Every structure is written in C-alpha cells, then in structure tokens.
Length: 408
Image: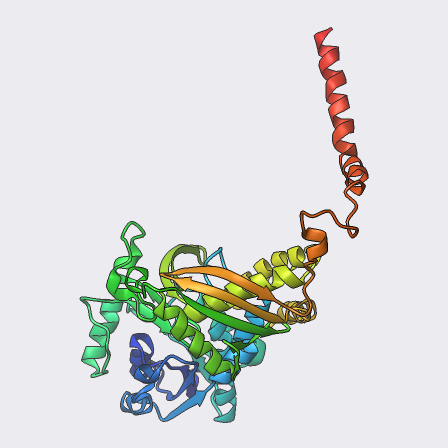
C-alpha cells in the first residue's frame, strides 16, 4: 500500500500526539493536519494549541467547539441509558472517542486527506474506539497508529524523543500521569497508580476536594429531568453545557465523584485508573431515584439489564452501530415518564436522596401505606402465594417421597 500523502491526526497537544507530528513527517514524509475537538478539557489544555501544532510541523490545525454536541448528543443519551461500566466507571473517556474520531474524519474528508492517525497505545482501548469509528465513517482511508510501529516503548522514551526534536511538553520523567479530561470527567493513569497495591496519591485529584476537606455543612441540590434528560439545577433551566458545569462545581466542592478502579480493558488486560466525575455522579444518582418512582418493575429491571450492554458497547467503541442506535430508541421510549425533580443532600463525598417528585409517579400512598385501605385487599395475597409456590410445593413433595423410599 502506498504511503498516505496527507494525514489527519487526532491531536490533543499532549505528550503522545505532540511527538507524532514530527514522527509522521520523518517516517512517512506526509503533510499533517492536526484536528482537535473542544469537549470541555479546559482553557489550560487548549491554550496555544494551534501555535504548538504548527511549530511542531502541522500544515493545518482545526479546533472545533464540540461541547454542546458532546453533552446533548452523547452524554445525555448515556445518562438516559444508565450505563456504567463494571459498577463504577461512568465512561467519560469512552463516550468521547467516537465524537472526536467523527470530527477527525469530517476534517480529513473536507481537506483531501488520504490517511488518519491517532496517538493511542497498542495496549489501550482507545485505539479500538478510534479505529472502529474510522471503519464506520471512512473505511477507505489509511490508518496510522505510531505506537504500533515506532521504537518508542514508554513515556520516558517519548519524552526523550520530544526533547531531541524540540517539542514542548508538560510531562516529566519524575511525575508521569496519563490524564484525559473533558466536561464529564478526568481520568488519571500511570505513575504510582500502575501498582494496584499503592494508594492513590493525594496530589492526583484535580476536580474534586478531598471528602475530609469538603465543607462541614451539608448542601442540597435539586436536579430536574425531562424524559430522562437533565434540564435544571435548583430550579434553574439552563443549556446542557452550563448545567453540567454547574453540577461539576457543586459535586466537586463536596468531594463527590471520585473512584479508584481496576477494570477489564477491551484488549484483554486489567488496568488501574482513578476517575473524577462530580456532576455525572450527581446526575446518575438522581436519575436512578426518579426511575424508581416512575418506571414499572418489569420495565425498570429490563432497562437495567440493557444498561449493562450499552455500557459495554460504549466502552468497546461500538457507538456507530445499528445495535447502539436501536438501544437508544428503546431507552428514549421507556424514559418518557422519567420527568420530575430529585433533591439530593451532599456531605463529604456522600450523596443522600431527600425527595423525589414526578407527575408520572407510580407510587400510590393508598396502596403502599401500612394503613389498610380499599385499594389493596390483603386476602388476595394468599392465592398469589399459592400459585407462585405451587412448583416449590410439588418439588418438596417429591423430595419427601424420595427420602422416605431411601429410609425403607
């Protein structure tokens, strides 16, 4: 296969993608188009990004504000599904990759690129997420994954390569953490975290206060939902981005949203990472409370089963697939009654539900009350128990006869 002449690189300005630009030019002799999506990683990470990319060899730099699309078209769909990977991980990195790869493909096609490149390692999940998106949207473009080709085998090697090629970076060999940040979360990997026997250092956390240092006075926050989608905080209806930023600030102040997780990567190994998702933790906690109030038992339990499948699909990078679209259609329909407000109390990292209100509540005080009412005849329970218990009773009888036979 001929080497591509113009390559669109998924560019973040971090260590890996910073050294990839000179490496691509040196090893492929190609023109490099740097593509970056602003998904809420913050001004500090985005500042000077275009200048840096051009100084390191990019001929074009495209930076797109994708925060609104990220929250409304990706995060809110995931929230509505209730998907969480392996009990803890709220999929902050996983859900962002298909969107970033989609933008990269769009720029590549618009600028006449014949190749795509990314800075994902050959050990990680992100290579799968990016490349499955490429296959779905532009299968004819060549794909270059430098980590699967070059002789760089560690962060230290990459730092040395950057030094030799005069590439400005912020990582150092004395304190190396691989971080990924967006408006939903920040992840921390590498360094002291690589050994799961080590406690997470206090200095890794960036979005959340230590619960021990959080305010000594509890705080309350009310989150409003419309058909499973968050729409308000404390009665204030605002745009999706502003709402999430507000809840991030509230949750972070009270030490909410920290997890330390050993997870099963899609590529077959276990890894350890620490994640901070303050606003997302509040949103998902409130969503569960509202679903418990408004969804019937069969629907709720089936939704919980599919949420596991949805989370795994997102984690594995299977966003642009018919199954994911079909699952979204299911979650959209079953979430129609998930409208209302949930009030939470926050205190030093803990979340306590205080109240749940919905015009579609299935909770009947007349039925649930311990006071005997006309809406529920307790005598009906006898027939219910007899029918449910019939196979249990029959089996017990057979066991009794078998035991009696052995006794003879």
